[in-house]
Image (cartoon, rainbow, N blue to C red; front, side):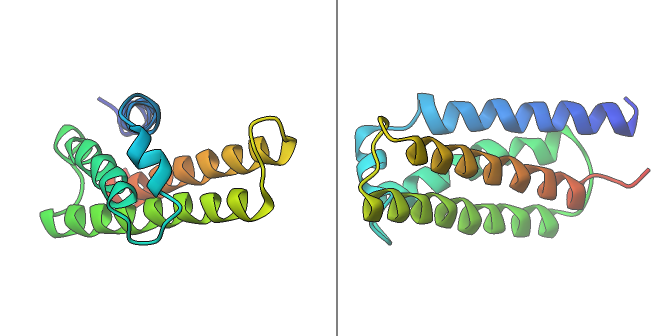
Length: 128
C-alpha cells in the first residue's frame, strides 16, 4: 500500500472509531459526567477512545512502541479536555440542542477530535 493510501486508510479507521466511541458506545453516565472534572464517566470515555485507537498502530506500521504509548497518552489527555471544555461552555451558557451555539460548540468539538487524529498520524506514519 502506498504511503498516501495508508494515510487515507488510517484516518478512515480513526474517524469510524470516533463515531463509534462518541455516539454508539457513549452511555448516559458518560454523557452526564463529561463536564465534571475527574468524574469516572469522562475518564472512561477517553479510555474507550484510546483503546479503539490502539489498533491503528498495529494496522499501519510507523514509529516505535514508546511512540505509540506516548500518542495514546496524549490522545487521552487531549480528548478528555476537549470534551470537558465543551461541556463547561455549553453548561455555563445554558445552551441546548435548540440553540445555534450548541451546534457550533459540538461541531468545533468534533473538528478538534478529527484534527487530533490528523496530528497522531502525521507523527506516526512514515514520511515517505
